[in-house]
Length: 360
Image (cartoon, rainbow, N blue to C red):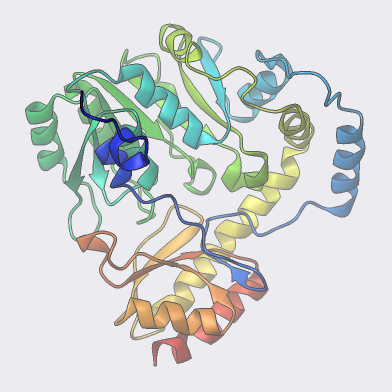
């Protein structure tokens, strides 16, 4: 018998070894505009109330996995109909992976328009699915005929659609998504992470009408990124199957308690969201006045731009204390593209002041 190596090169699946871990850039002492976070802290009074609430949490006990109080508040905040159910995740990333695990079988395919959220591909590969990306048009609009042809050819077990899309920020036509749902032989998951900034664009009213449609939502973009709380929303038959793969106690007691409290004060989060949308419009208008910048329309809390030399501009901004996301080299359609998270008015002013010299 040949000796068996015990190192990762022989034991870890080749497709996993070929992946790169999700990278988070160091942000100490930087204006952090790279991760689509809400830039506003909690008001001092609400933060103090949260501290007092968390001090009373029994951290020596496991959380209630059914989370009835949290689910009730999420149902109210997201206007989730009673005939739909929720599965809670440690961020929407975990929800995506649970879905991929549920439908993974030998030869199964996961499909998504590209460029889009990197975790669609990573979740698929981690769970043993074959991943197929379908390029968007040059302006990041959905190439519906190409996507429908790919669905017919690949017969995917799951199709991911970000609505609005990340990193381009645009909304695909609702009718096109419904055509994909009708054509898909497998599950279609519509990821509405940026719903709050989209002017109310949602397919919530379509879930339940289509047996293969699920939604994914997150609280991260509303100002609660540190709590790591996401949800799948769908019919009870689908959610019952996904629940079998949810790790026990995956949402911790502190996140549950904080989210319950803050969702009772969602007027604060909604006011911050309105401020971000207003700042997005101001930032877009200012970017349009910079001759070297091509700005793409956004329905999210970030703006994608194309510049003459993205690596140089990224480094120029970084040297001036501004951290953005450089997508150059990640996909052909993202050549020389930077993604700019919408910050506070002061942060956006600092970005705009640094941008022109960074482009020079």
